[in-house]
Every structure is written in structure tokens, then in C-alpha cells.
Length: 139
Image: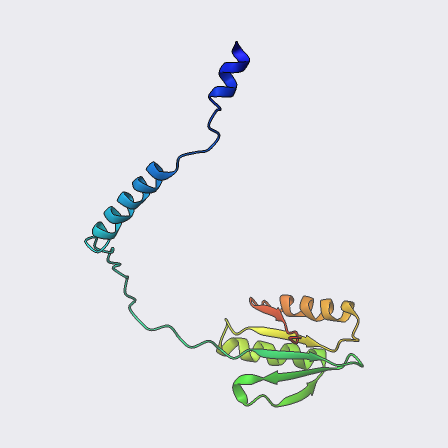
């Protein structure tokens, strides 16, 4: 008896999505009407007393393949001139007196040992240079 009843009324295995579509269309209409009525928030930006100073061109310490040093000042036209370690320290002290926040970048030849780069960085830190960076080529 149960078998005949099941076969005469098969179960429905589909979901009726029409009511969901109706609800979504009503919500869409509500959002389309209310969206233009909303005011976007206004941002009140703070003001500064003086304009920011332009960034200072860095000093570039060059370590060549034979571990000799050279110095290039990008603020003075970028002319490279060879220096010894003592001359480099004196030049850095002189330029730091003019501008204590001037950055110094190290550019070393690819074949220079890492130890040489670390030694130059150590010397720069002993000269109390605050901004030290490494220069690399983009690929």
C-alpha cells in the first residue's frame, strides 16, 4: 500500500526560485532609489605651516671591482672622484655639517665581496650617518 502511494505522487526535487528573484528585484529598486539621496562624507584635511622641503640628493659611495672607493655627489652634478677611506670619512663629515639628514647610498660592483660592503657600512655608521641605503639595478 505504501508503494502504490509513493508512485502515484512523486516528490518534487526542484527549488522554486521565483520568490527569491522577486525579493532581489525589490531590494535592487530600493537601493537604486536611495543611493543618489545619500551624501558622501566630506573629508576635512589638516593644513601644514610650511611646505615640505624637496628631498636631498644622496651621496653615493662606489665600491669598485678592485675594492677602491669613489664618491659621487648627485647634488653637485654627479661627478665621480676616487677617495681613500680617510678622505671618504672627511668628505662625509663635511657634507653632514651642511645637511645632517642627507642620505648615503652604497653601490658596489657585483663581484665585490660582501665583507667589503659591510666594512663600508660600518664606517658610515661610525660617522653617525642616519640614512644608509644600498643601490641596486632593476632587471
